[in-house]
Amino acid sequence: MTNDEISERLSECHAEFRELAVDYWGINKDNGKRAEIIALVEDLYKTKNLMKDYVAKRAETCYGLKALEKLEKENSDMKIAKINGNYQVTATLIAQLLTLAGVVLVALK
Image 1 (spheres, helix red, strand yellow):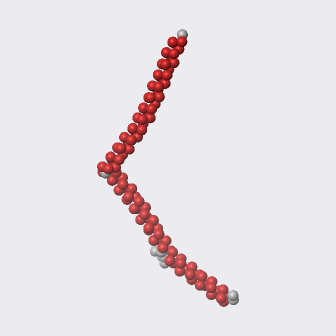
Image 2: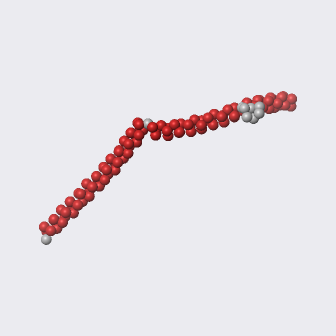
Image 3: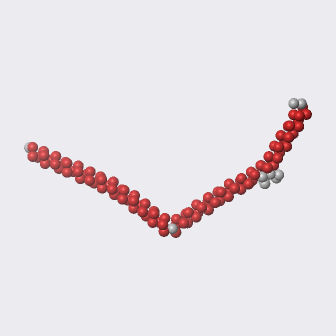
């Protein structure tokens, strides 16, 4: 390649780069694709916050969610009662075994 061809190709590359830069940044550096992306991200955060607020308000007024929370609490209470009941049965069995051991020791004397 000659110097003229290299120079021409280099100027073409610079022109393509400027076109891409204008497309990305925009003419005023605030109206290109970058600005559109930033606006979309801001809209996404606004929408997320609106949805959080909606869900929080809906949770206060929704009977189904209240009933579901009540059922979940009852379920956890039942699990705790079952665990406590298992401990109670175990404690009763140990007490009966100790009583039996006491009776056997008294009988052996």
